[in-house]
Length: 89
Image (tube, rainbow, N blue to C red; front, side):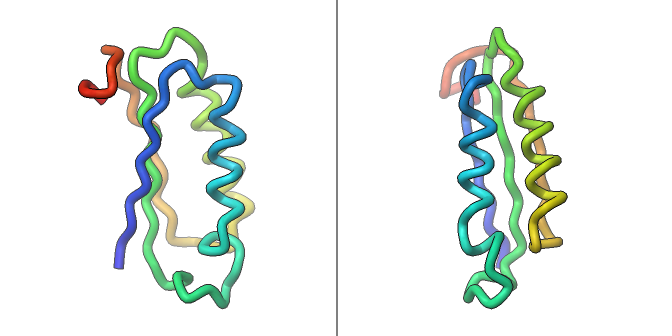
């Protein structure tokens, strides 16, 4: 089974790292005996129309968290969208 987690972000430079770390604190990422340990995960962060460094911080946090995760089958991506608005994201 594959699970895709998408996080929409607009000017979240100050809290996107905390959000990503909180996600990676969940048992699916930390417990090798979790009933979800076999799930293939994909995480997509979508900064839309940001005027700050949300995308840069998100890339860094994803890199740090995936490097320290026990889960090896995680695909991560930051997909920036220039136009603001959730409907565009």
